[in-house]
Image 1 (tube, rainbow, N blue to C red):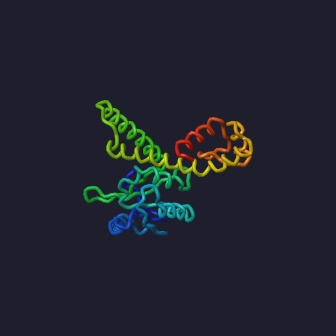
Image 2 (cartoon, rainbow, N blue to C red):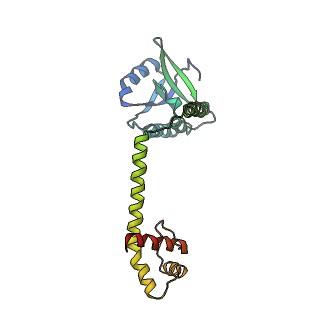
Image 3 (tube, rainbow, N blue to C red):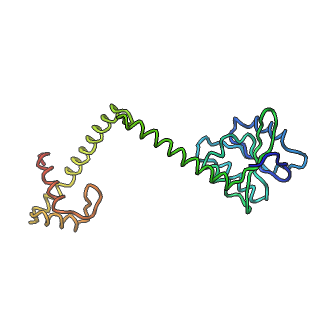
Length: 227
């Protein structure tokens, strides 16, 4: 990053949000000179952290018109991996963006080299992960468990009931087929399994292969359900 860069040449403006438009326009008016030409401007409308379609359009316009990307009031954008990935697509051997910042009433244009930003962002993410993991490990050492225990217990019970109902429904659906197979003389577990495979009937988990144990479990469940 280098300050006091003279904004001379062709520029594509990217403003990070509609709320930032007035602020961005004011900074552009103070930073650009008569030797600065604005080719186009893009104002981000997406509020999603990792989805910046207007930024992608701005980068494409820069490459198409051999212009530089300039961003007023850049804020925390360089900390976003999605942002760094997008601007890294700028053409050039050492691509960079121009950022307008105001400090103590003084407006200056800075150069941000895209590769340097990307590497710093990745490093910071790794640091944040390590700090977060260290904090969680420290809390777990005190016996703390993540999540709401009451909600987790309820969710576990509900999930168990849902699985049970699915198993019961499948048993009710498949047993008429198995009873028909048995009437045709296939009475061994292996014989029933082979017949189900031959009919291309899938198991409850969507598998094509039946085993004697799987058939046995179904017969036991059918007995419990009185089928």
